[in-house]
Length: 433
Image (cartoon, rainbow, N blue to C red; front, top):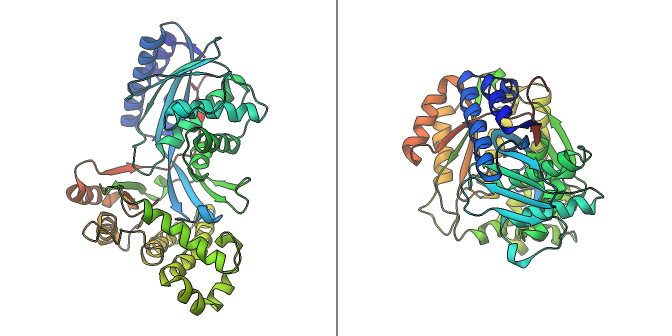
């Protein structure tokens, strides 16, 4: 903990450079940019809450899905990874039992009395609900909460499929955990609390993948066989070691009117499960599906069968990706990524909406990726699909070509070059602290 003026001097002098290199990238340009970003955040805190306050820095990353596309809602297995885009927070405790959070880019400050922890209809859909909900979840688990003042700023792209909302939720959990609970709660605990806040207080149904990936960091598999107690396995992942970067391209498609498309995937998978008297596909024996395909397709249609086939293969694939990373079999990793992309496109069929056949940005992005990278890298759609972002693993010598190709088609700045971050939601400390 440092007074704001001291913290600014420490950042500018290089005391936080080791942390910056670990969290973002090990190059001088990144260090310089992040120094400036952190200093500006501290100055914004001072302007809002006054100079001379003792403050702590926190960071929580965004995340990308690597495998397990559309498997979590049927209690499957997913593979995800934290990325080196994040929310950072400059935080100072107060003794008022009031949490004040001002986020860059938003007009209003969230002001939450943490002694009043019932959901409020007036806050649904607002970030104040997430602050109150996380506090309520911590108290439910026997933890302590108290007041703090915070300024946050995020470079996790909103609407990009990188989970900017989950990053915000888990950084709030990390603040309460660090400031009032001496870090007693695990990263998975914080993820569950964040999900509770989003489900109950923000009023948005969501799974647990996003919050877990943001909270835990690194590359992880999450097995949702028991959704209330997911099994998380973590593995470090160094793309740079293999001469590769992670690219996320926003294909600029509209998510409007896609609710039915998203819902149909879950409902059709659960429809196949119901055929066998089960609630979700995880409870179904895959061999039984194949033994009964003729009858299942007659009753539920071919697409439902194909999506069920995708589910079983994709759950195995997520585990195979984890093993390939663990055993440093990078070529196998790339093959699994490509195969998962094919399965999503061909079987799960969420590359584009059949209601909008002229709008196939995701499919086009996948085709362009294959054109540039075939034989050298890997590519796939990610997330909900139908519109939005695609993912590629690109060798450094093709990076400029790949990025220019995507930016030319989808617009300047559409392709973001990232890396996997091996840290979740944490306090950010100087090397000498």
